[in-house]
Image 1 (cartoon, rainbow, N blue to C red):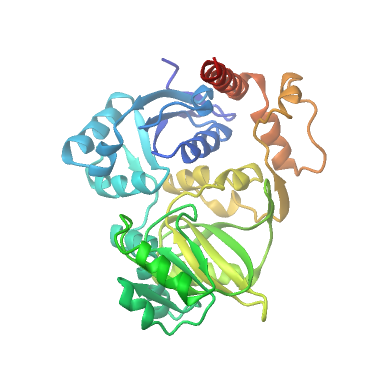
Image 2: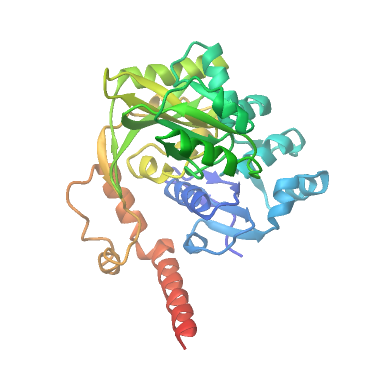
Length: 386
């Protein structure tokens, strides 16, 4: 077992945090965000394998059953509480939706001395996460959104007042799963019929507006935005961070009107006809592209922990505007890592350069993790071929 205490540059000892996650990419994002801030962490997850487990800041890993995390009964809450006490955990952080729902339930029962990462109220979490309830909330708050209708059954399609083309989505879902663009009524009827008995529940239909997607990520302190990034994906592995006052004001309005607390990632779309933006989806938790913000100098995990500890974030946060390529280790960048991180790619900002050196440094465990994963994949392929 590794040491449970790390020392920051100012010599102050840091106790471990506990990351609860069920999705590998979210686990890796938070582990690396904690590592860049020199935060030691424990990880509780039903998927304990991955390159992230070799990071030097990972104190230990406890594998669980995913059903326990979803069910979140009193015995599992007690298990997490006892774990925090037994291993000197100072704060618990949820990485994804399942983890967030569990932590919202468990937060009141966390032992003294163990803090919950900033989160909104449970009812607001569900209202934002559910696409139909989110659309109704935006309507109530007079915030821009596309025309949206709920589809419970086949008959609802025929009564729709939304003109084609449209998007049909499950009311609850992630990563763009089961989202279809519909251009004909025949396609709409087929899609509605196919979703009639979907395990994800009801669906919504929304007016499709030609334009571009833009996202804003926020950290809020009881209704006040204290850190943010505004991003657009320009290539498969390149994220562009920009400053747009109108997008920031929309995010601030939503946070203020809901008294939101914690991190949130909001999907918006910009109408190509008039350049105006409107809300599409909300993710009241960490998000899959978090690493690009961290690499560019806005570490939402560390900022949230500092806010929880009473720090003045006005001295810690600076808005960013820059393109950020994918900086983690890849087969092409591995040779640079083996040179000790000296061959840094050109065109990076100072923050991105620091992240690249950290990720490609031999001592942080990422190279070992990448190599172990590559060997296991190669072994599996050889075994299947043989």
